[in-house]
Image (cartoon, rainbow, N blue to C red; front, side, top):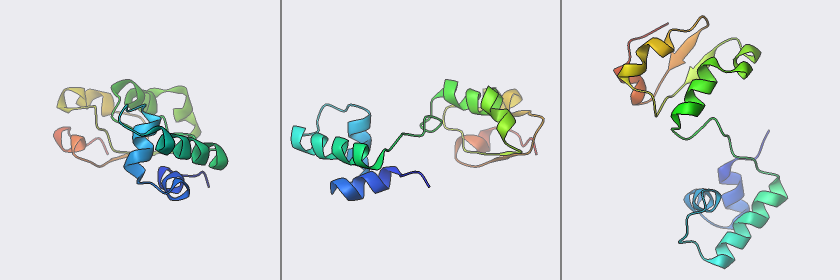
Amino acid sequence: MSPTLRDVARVAGVSFKTVSNVINDYPHVSESTRARVLAAIEELDYRPNRTAGGDRRRELEVLHGSRRQLTDGLLFSPLALGSEDAQLLDVPYPLVRSGSASSTAPSTT
């Protein structure tokens, strides 16, 4: 199983929010903390899940991109898609939505 953000936090001795701040290059992280987090990332060979994080382009890639062919269905928790995107959720495979943004779009399953 791939290491998670929480695994990196545990190894670095910081909160998972601090790890997120380092990954997103938030400027208000001390250099010593940043160095510990980066060392933990390297030690664990952590790779952020690029499909996560409320980015509209990434969410659409999850729904309609080339990697979609590698799965039989999708558990989807959109953050950047809203009710105006309901037609984009009409997909030819099993789709289960969860999360706050999903409540604004009609069900497609």
